[in-house]
Length: 345
Image (cartoon, rainbow, N blue to C red):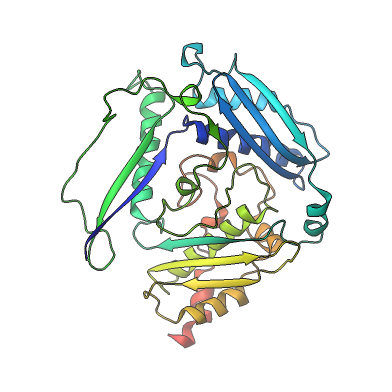
């Protein structure tokens, strides 16, 4: 039966997204000097203050306070009247080294943590993403554009966009039959950003992924180097799912990859095409296991993740991006998958 589905995106000045961008800016600065660094960096933003905590193991030096202030400035917090700005905000840093108990497993190519990660793709948009989240991201990006170019000079960096799409009986977007627009329906939104709400890295994981349309393993991405399976595993799973759909093997595909700490290979790979597959889910899973190396090091190598890619992903989603370099969005392996499964069709 027809149904409605809603997804949201947030502006680059949303407190949680600001924290994500700070974490990934620090990560990128370190990876630019030390591609083998281990980084788990989280930020907290509140009225007049940024706190950075985490574990970093590296031989290089980066100026963390400078990176924080530069990021805050680029996002648009440049006036003291906002209650939070790049020049006057306090900065506190509390960084330790990675635990040797974790390092001993990662050093030999094992997963740095246990957990499950999901990747998803569908044929609703050219980017092979769900339509609601893509519309929300486009509106959020446009909101930033009209703020920066002074078309709407009164706008500030914080904001949120929510889009509801009607789906038909076949599970596809059924088109627009009614548009209702709500702008600040409480009547006032003047106090925003960290002065109104504290922000924390990793609290917008649905905005980062599929807008709630697909399952999520619970781990965030920002501030984590690619040896962290929360990040690399989710990127690898998206890469696989997108190639499955691009190969015409299914209209929708969700891939779950599960890891055990210290173990290099996934302990389980699951494929679900929600009844849209041209071949069985089991056959696709077998082909994926054969063709894709979904170990942490395998994903890092295939997607070339040991480089400063990540600040650009920290706003407007990590997936479905055509405006940035996102190697997990490549569909170059679709033909290989289709060939492998041609005998099952």
